[in-house]
Amino acid sequence: MHSKFIDLLRCPVTGQRLALRGDRWADGRVFGGMLRTECGREYPIVRGIPRFVPGERYADSFGYEWHRWPRAQFESENVGRPMEGHTTRMFERITEVDGEKINGRTIVEFGCGPGRFLDVVRRKGGIAVGVDMSRAVEVARRNFADDENVLIVQGDVLNPPFVRGVFDGGYSIGVLHHTPNPAAGVKALANMIRPGGWMSVCVYTRGKFYDFPSVQRYRQTHLRLKRTFGYGPALAYAWLSAGVISPLLQRMKRFSSLKGRMEALERNWVVSLGLKDRRWRFLDIFDAITPAIASTHEEGELLEWLREAGCGDVRRTAFCATSAMGTVGSAAVLGDLSRMAA
Ligand SMILES: C[S@@+](CC[C@H](N)C(=O)[O-])C[C@H]1O[C@@H](n2cnc3c(N)ncnc32)[C@H](O)[C@@H]1O
Image (cartoon, rainbow, N blue to C red):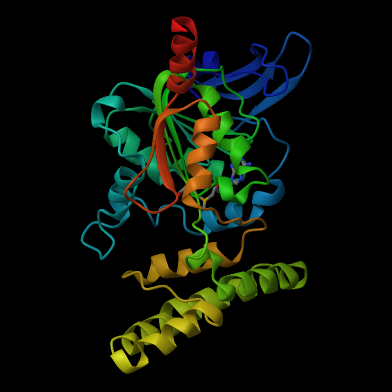
């Protein structure tokens, strides 16, 4: 962690400032020590990462996932391959934010995983701060080992360890539906962004792939088997589907007489994805069937969460029915102005 980031951090329980104690440095960065509040709460810095949670809790499947596929979805790994440009297009279609609102600004990602979207922010000239609860933070730290404009923090997005209103913008992609309270996650994100800053959120859509009875069934089966067999069965199924079942179903769907039946099979019985790259299919099928928590939501629900968090200019973005953006604080400011005018 570069020392310039210490001023962004706060105790997630009391909101108090944190002082560095027993710090160990290398190449101008803090890699060990303790962050301590005035009232004596302590948070360790381990391998250069400030740690605000004692463990992964319900996010452990992601710790496993991102250690297995640390860079598969980074643009640099996909040059000349079928998914080239996908991560950047996905970021742009979810956030719909101009480059000038990123370039030179400090942007936070809630649930950064290994950091494919932090990488997009960096390439657009932003200073990137990622928080994640799982041991994905170790992977993210390695992915940005030489970049002093990236801060990785292990923390809970429902209880974020930052100064309120310190960021110019922020986003959370594919994360809040894996927490017990996505609405609270939207509010927490809004609280960390300055008034007038931007925020974007994307969650699972009700009735779409992540909500299919087939996906729910495999997820429940995985959670039962995991106690005895760990991730073995989920890996075996994801590998088989990515390599054999998904390509076969895609081919059969080309026949109009079979299309309906194949879609029903996918919806109800077989988890399958049509992504063009086999590695992405393997990763995304594993990702769909292993999380401990996975809720699905509707467009109106997400827009309401943003409004309740005090955002104005709230609207759906191009990526899907449950991707949306808003301007932080503007609803509250407009409310104050109209009350003053009245
Ligand atoms: C599907 S991954 C998405 C990662 C990244 N946003 C991306 O799309 O590449 C979900 C991430 O959310 C993290 N996560 C889940 N619950 C969390 C919480 N309460 N606080 C912080 N991170 C959380 C997981 O550890 C995981 O890395």
